Amino acid sequence: MKLLSNFKTNSFTISGFCAKLCILSVILLMNLTLLAQRDRDIKYILVPYIVEGQDNSDSYVEKAFFWGSSFDYAVFEFSNILWGNLNNKREQQRLAQARQQSLAKLNIIKTQFSNYESYPEKIIDGWHSAIASDNMNFCKDVKVLIKDNRITRLVIDNYIPINFLSTGEIKNAKNVVTLKNFNGEQLNIVEIYFLYDIEESRIVPEPLKPGYVCFWSDMKNYRDILLDVDSKRMERLSIRFNSEPDCFGNGMICRIMKPGVYPYLARGKGAVNWEGSFEIKENYCLKIRLGR
Image 1 (tube, rainbow, N blue to C red):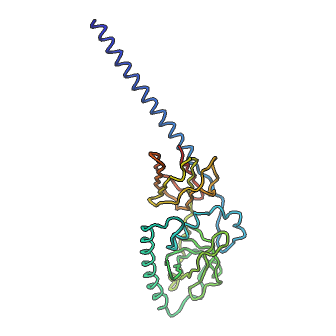
Image 2 (tube, rainbow, N blue to C red):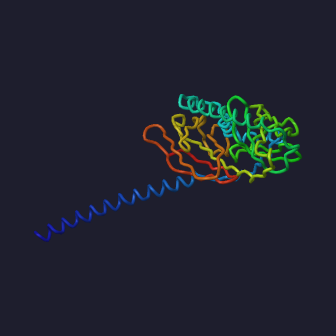
Image 3 (cartoon, rainbow, N blue to C red):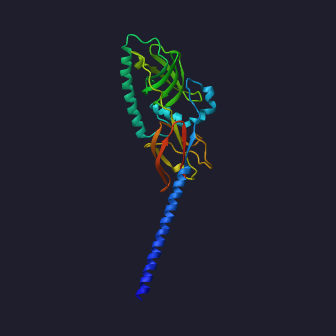
């Protein structure tokens, strides 16, 4: 009887062990499946487009779609202006404070600029740091490429190239440009101050080359997804995709970003969520699928 009892005990022990082993195997298989899914859901696509600036809108017509919301958001963020459906109280307070800081900076810069008795006849060829302001919402540093005393490229935040139209040659270390999107639509008129080149010419390093990230979903409840990228709330997805879209497709959430690693968190309906980080690479678009 004791032998039979031990056999039964051992049998239950073995059965329990097998059951646990089966459960662990299932969990491991599920995890491997999720990891494989994540690998499939994250794809890098080379972006061959090169933005030269200085209002080459004719050559950008076929490429205009690639900026989409990414370009508009970048310009509006740079200009301290509310964009899209990000119109919330916290955002309004942040932009109001940013405007106050910009106007205070502008007053200091204009006073310093006007105190000079003479200005350089021309700005030498190469990349320069300058100050851009619309005299109303923002006053920020930019990088500009100069050739023959004209602005040929304009970059904000040291990585975002902007389409623009300049008024002509730089005079008295100052120029006026019109910011435009790549459909040729006017966005803002901006004054460019070459304050750093008045006493002596200063060439600066070339700006960084940007990368891009685009989120998409094939879920039925795509409208319920709330997406935060680098702790900033994005707009909502506007389209449910039946198949994998190309980068910058209409309805995706796209951003132009500096090379680096960024966290993201997306929350869907119920307990569905996605959390992790992604790496932005120069001249590459990263597509991230938000799906089961």
